[in-house]
Length: 259
Ligand SMILES: NC(=O)c1ccc[n+]([C@@H]2O[C@H](COP(=O)([O-])OP(=O)(O)OC[C@H]3O[C@@H](n4cnc5c(N)ncnc54)[C@H](OP(=O)(O)O)[C@@H]3O)[C@@H](O)[C@H]2O)c1
Image (cartoon, rainbow, N blue to C red; front, side):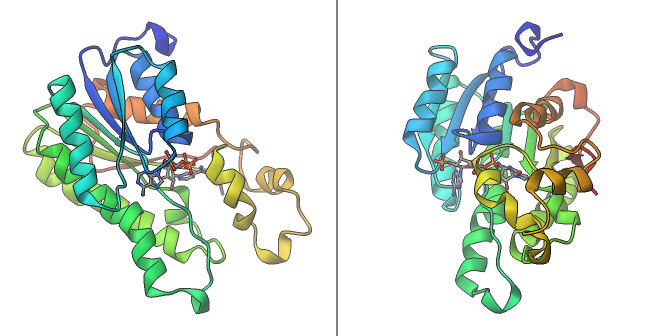
């Protein structure tokens, strides 16, 4: 069945943070293709948000500027979705930022900036979304394959994502009492702006001049290539659907066999 033929999300309302580009945009597109009404949040790239909106069914999608580092803005995004579309069934929390820096270069300010988006931002998105959800609600957060791999200079980002995996595990106990599931996707390297900007930093500094990115990928991944955002979005759609009704508290790695 192609996504366009599926109706898993007919009459469902979804909020997708980080929905203007990359993985979040692919998630919004996939959920809409399967029948959802979608509210996407973005940090500042209005042009990208409007371009995506133009591809979604008219009257069935909105874009709202909302920096997830500010929980009040996330709350406003969710309120607007509920006001406009009447309910909330799915939160796909995709907004995130990369960071590389070795121990001696780290500052408390950088720690706060990365965790404010990747960790705190996702926690309070859950808090505000769950307040509007009924039984059957689905929450999907975004970790990374980096949470469980050692990469040179990647401590802050990896730790900010590892915390997300612990959050879904623990929040599942609370949300399960209301019939709401919460899981995370841990993507591997995915062909987005983030990978273009930071992908080369995944190689150990001593290897950067020796291996091309393509060679490095073929050494470290069973499939030997980056994911397309749509291949990652398929996992979000699964966890957001009734097909995953008995799955909660878990992190699903979609990484092309990264090792
Ligand atoms: N790409 C990968 O290889 C990879 C691998 C593992 C995990 N991930 C995770 O997957 C998620 C999506 O990554 P991506 O590659 O699609 O990133 P991307 O191409 O850089 O896109 C980032 C998206 O998040 C939004 N965003 C960033 N900071 C935000 C903030 N403070 N508040 C609200 N929105 C914000 C951006 O909005 P604007 O357009 O307005 O800037 C954009 O929509 C992230 O959580 C990332 O950590 C990515």
